[in-house]
Length: 200
Image (cartoon, rainbow, N blue to C red):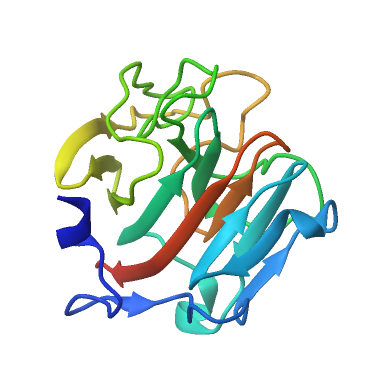
């Protein structure tokens, strides 16, 4: 199924954010920059914590309502993530926005497609070593996450929501850019065919 969903050219209405060749339009956090590399047309994260932010010109890297599709492949016991409504920061875990989890067999019980610490999924919905497509739709106060076309997460932000706890007060729907996560030296996650469709 994933092979059918994966696309070298974006679907109609979508714009590619990654050219498959280099990191034009993306900026690494200023810690452990070697965690990210380009290999076989994909962005590969492997190494100590680092985040890679989209800072390119499309929509001035500011997205509120959108569909984002990313083809992802994990190696065994790997952890990663895709952030939205975030903003560039030089180090640390992103303070702003939401993380959509990438994890099929890592020890963290929050598995792929979890809206991390907001609506968590405990079941593995994809396999290591195989490409799958994570599809995130944000419209108003509504977030949905699909994996290879199957809806896994469906969450509506309640009125007055300001994050799941006092340490995550920036985790609420607003607007911002996207980021990819390099989680730890034991994790290898590849991301490719990153494409977005802005919504009104």
